[in-house]
Amino acid sequence: MEEEEFQMGLPNGVGEAMLAHTIEKFDVKLEQTEFGPKLIGSYEELEKAKQFLADSIAERIKELEG
Image 1 (cartoon, rainbow, N blue to C red):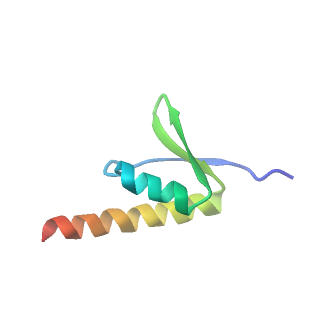
Image 2 (cartoon, rainbow, N blue to C red):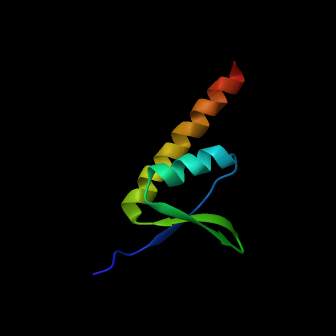
């Protein structure tokens, strides 16, 4: 039985390097749609990717705040 794939839109602030790390670290793929880039994968992998992206953005904000 094939695992169901889900889509997750990317929030503003996700840079190319951050996106590349996410794709390498988790079993997700990037797909360009008419509504912008989306990550495609299993629900579990997308949840992990979402948390990773949120943590990465929060860390970047801290760095910029000084």
